Length: 306
Length: 306
Image (cartoon, rainbow over all chains, first blue to last red):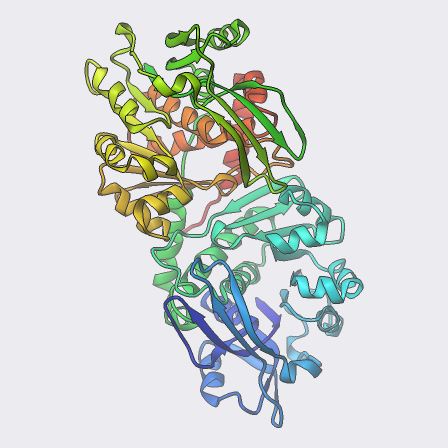
């Protein structure tokens, strides 16, 4: 059972009330790959980096069992770079720098032996790039999940609509759902987005959890309350990696199983928030994950006789 | 099994993006009384109104089975009045008028036959008034629940600390929990508030649900996602009424049962949001409540084999 992800591998430079970092390993595909590999799924990344991307990071990703055959290295180019500073509440942040670099001309190529994944995860990239990956596959995957952001709604709406109608699941945050649908109510927003193509809509609310909509069904998973949120960078991508990774691993795309996938995604995302960058996710083992899932179960478990 | 509530019975004048009202029935004790009476508990209010309070509202409260022997009517006085206007997001509001009127000299008197409730609900009032009710009882109730707000933290901190150390459960919103504890993290805030007296801390997050903390245990109940939030006035009080009413009815103050109580409170609060004031709560019957609880169960139900 396999997951194919197209997304960024990047350098991040982060500042939070708890400290700051130099350039460290970041990018959506990095978090998605690491989260899904923890679930024991055969996971591969299609991405691009520059000649400045250190062998150390490549070795780290490979050591996690992430297949990098589809990660192009543009020797003369520079890796995508993002710098951000979080405010005291850790819910809002300022982007200090965004250097697209090699991402600007990124033309993803799916390796021949990765053209039949069970699940395809289209990370937040230009909709044309997302569509380009989808059309390279030998057959339609059992499930296609798409992430996007307000930026593409502003500047590539038609292309976004064109790829969205091809996917099964869309995963976006509350503000993006509101922008995409023109509805303030998230229930109404989800219903409207379903008419654009995806049968399933996930609305991420950061520290306030995530909602899963499919037809008339709704499921909610809270974010695990933490003593300290250290750095939320990558939490949404970790969530997506846990979600799509669990579904790829189990190859069961029922609503019941998607609920489990949401819980796996939320549990993994809570780990990512506890240290800078990928640090805490790197150190997580199967036992740590099970401990986290138990906490989730306790947090949500109740019984009522009706 | 009985619940005694001290709190406001008031006139509210409301404006939301969906319309506006004249002076209508409001007040914390009104919502708490109505919510708890729906659960079949013997519920009584200690409060005060003016001579302007219409017989129609008194009849309505009595028809819901709410005991009003402890509701003083000050013939020459005017009923407490609050006017507010909600912003488009319905999460924020401006207070346009607050007229304390008879509340200013409110000296609660607990009727003789109401001095041994199973559960005492101390609604949001001056801490001295809350304390005054507690000391009038023949014996300490099985459970004492307290609601308060930032206003009392600002202007009656010592009196608030004096009553808080006597209660079992405190129910406040996230901003109030942060102010009371000086901690941004709600996990840390709850722990700090526990050192002030209450063994159990409920932190209400409005549309983002509610957290229940007791020792190291945490439970979370989401708010039911609604197509439209029409008017959130009274949702927090309805929640408190459902919570304390369910505990009074079952007379079981274990953490497991408090989780159920939180779900009852959340289900009832979602009803209150669907129309102006107490309108939708008035119309709710047992069947409607069970339907709502089923929706809650669906919203949170998942199974994972660990």
